[in-house]
Length: 231
Image 1 (cartoon, rainbow, N blue to C red):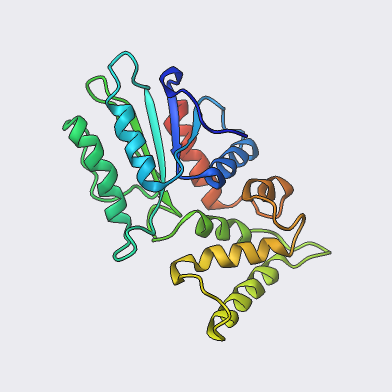
Image 2 (image 1 turned 90 degrees about the horizontal axis):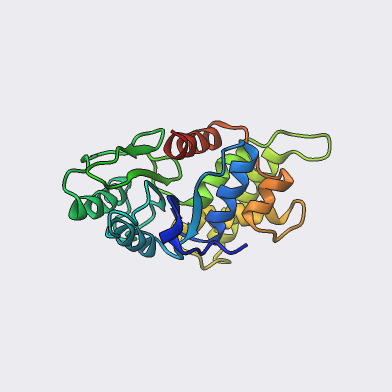
């Protein structure tokens, strides 16, 4: 599915860093019955997402969307990753265009929502994985994997624990070359490789039930989407 659109025709927009993010959000919305009242847009990178936010804010008043959401990983910058720096990066973009936007020092645990002001859009900010910890989409997905219930045919929790053990053992034996910041990526891909349709995208894994959708992280995220775009 293509997540590129002419955004000048869209009134509610969710900016995401990549294709995986788009598919995960789409399938979580289906699982939680989130009304599809917004456009999902693939920005193809975290800096590109911030640039697209800036671009949308600078549209003429008649062309600006009413609501913009943005979802960012918090593993950047690599030399000093932090939730605060990601939050500041978004707030700086907002206040450079409209200084009347509220200043938020820290993200809301439930997902930040900043009211519209002087003809500028309402803004939603979600920092992966949970608005509190440094991480990325894959850390969020690990929480979905941890919530997968054991069945008669598979101990999913044991599977995830063993995937983590395998990744750490391989790294300790110098069998890997990934950066430590990408440990979650290595674990979730290893875990998914052992289950239904190995190699399928994250969104497909959610649809197939290999990742749970009924746990608190998934509910918090979809509740944020509903509050942002549905009210």
